Image (cartoon, rainbow, N blue to C red; front, side, top):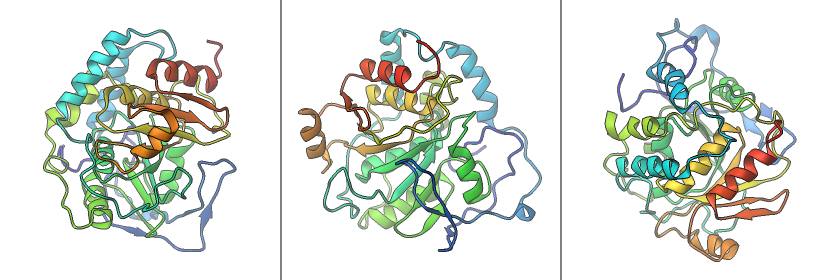
Length: 321
């Protein structure tokens, strides 16, 4: 399997890749839900007659249960935070500087506020190395995005991807501004730089990650952010969830993985070094430190990743913790 363009799938019955291409969407098909996270997606489904016979189980399909065996513990229970932070920091080191700095003044959202309609929607899951590549590109391009976590066992967002593109493959990007939806991490990164990079090319490494730099963060974190927690609430959050983060921050990574395990959609405000969005973070928290999380439906706000984890599992769980 190529470390460059292979997809993240976790179901061996999913059809193999069809040639990567932009999916132009019609204007008369819409899908909507009742909560904040839902937009009117303009969808196009791939015909089942175009699908090829199923392929062997992907590497990630094999890795999922193995890593879950090693991580093993209920994510809502008290953790060894020294170990958590150590493994997350090593994961950051393995990705070098990718996903740390904003290298381009984005042509998107010239007037930076937290209330703009967000044009980019990313369906992904945290443990996927190909999804990580796209998130790194978004940090570098200073782009904010609506994130729809699609962990293994998803009850909501994977179905949207299947209906939209015809298969459960991640990452999957919808650009509501241009009307384009697409798979394949390499194609998405190139598209983002072409569309919003103002002439810049992708940083070296975003398109040529190795097995070590690509898979090491997933292995080090023992599959955290890969599988939906069984006690996650089935309904979507009633209000907007917002996370200030940048991809390669160790503390923010821990929070994003919890959001993925709970399948909670959220607005990701990328605030890498040099970001124009840092003023929003300063106004909200009085600090440039990340993560900073806001639940607009309850008024909860915190910049402490341990406090955020406790809040998320207590608020968006069906279990009595």
